[in-house]
Image (cartoon, rainbow, N blue to C red):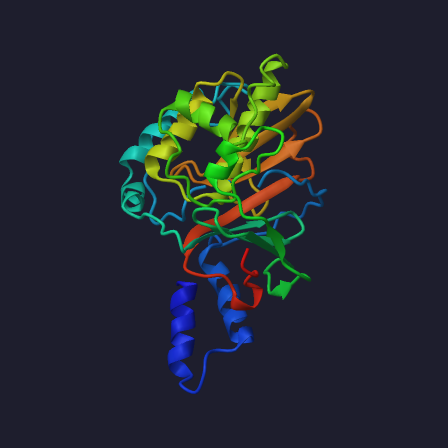
Length: 324
């Protein structure tokens, strides 16, 4: 299902005039059904909401099975995540689902649409213009199944990668672009690029405890994966960069906030902990969680689930921002 196709169908069915704003909003509401995982179930936990830099991979179809992960009953509790991350980096370059994605190049007039869900069932919808030349838009939808729009739409000022690179560290904006064609596929160059555009800061934290670098890198990678349309080689480089960074450990079975079981890549920093959760066969990001202290899987959930990322041709017309 594609929201643009739905709007075209509405226009064809209404020859006397364009579809109403309520019809178009309904079309946007219906697209979320194609982003959510089947057989979703709620995890009955209460949790505090943490505001973090917003993770990924475009929606995948089909499942490719690779080497099985070790059983959680026999695996070391603090085994390095590097083997899993290297496996992900290799698989992304060979899996048919990612090969299909590699031929899709977003156009400048399009948007990258993503949707996340928090422990309360609140949904966050986001539209980033492909090149960052238009303001980024966000809106919340309350309730486990969505459908109730929270008041207002948040608009972030437009910021292209070129603007982020040309401004000083004190005044530069963070790119609001949904597609980063110049994102390097060499891990060393990739880290430098992420620092240059302000997605991570592993330079000033170089003298901090090791976990602080892991935390900075994880939040930056999550931001890229959760908000951007990435080509397979770019995704592979992100996994390789994490694999080359000491301190990440593996949790073979970790459940995200909507009940999907994945593989946790965990780290600790300043006494606290965090984890990114990936699908064990497609390696798509499922979400993240954090803990105020050591990781305890049974603790109240603090984090978000990524429901999907897609390329769309427009935003809801009633929410179109004024020209900047």
